[in-house]
Structure formats: C-alpha cells, structure tokens
Image (cartoon, rainbow, N blue to C red; front, side, top):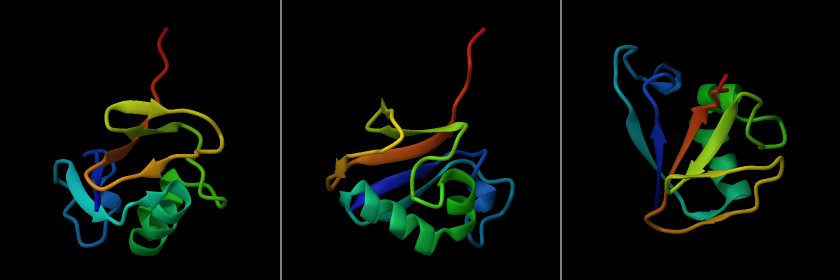
Length: 95
C-alpha cells in the first residue's frame, strides 16, 4: 500500500469529509502511476476531477510529490512501491 496525503486545501473534495478537516491520508494500492491514478479516479472522483486530466496526468496548476520529491513532466512514469507517500499539491510560482 501507498499513502496519498491529501492537503487541507483539498480535503473537502474527499467523500464524507467535513470541510474544516486538516490533511488526511488515504491508502491506495502500489503500482505504476497509471494504475494509481485510475484508483484515485474510481475511489475519489471529485478529487480526481480537480487534480487529474482525462488522460490521468496531473492537471495544470498542480504537481505530484513522491516521497518529498516533485515528479515533473506531462507523462508521469513512476512505479509506486509499498510504503511510498504521494501528494498532489498546488503549484506555486515565485516572483
């Protein structure tokens, strides 16, 4: 299993979650990103609608973080292993 860490700013998109909650961890099956994204889309459809594209890429304005490292690129090719922590967070621009 891997852990999807959902930041407080997105927790309200989880099923049956009060809007005043802090971040939450959701266990998911390990495997290639395509399988993990499909599980997110199936189990967490409202969250998926916001953070994933129709082709299961990370939506514009968000980044995928795996074990505290940003995974960049339009096509994510990462195999997620048991014990990995992932998060989709808002991308911030400096200035």
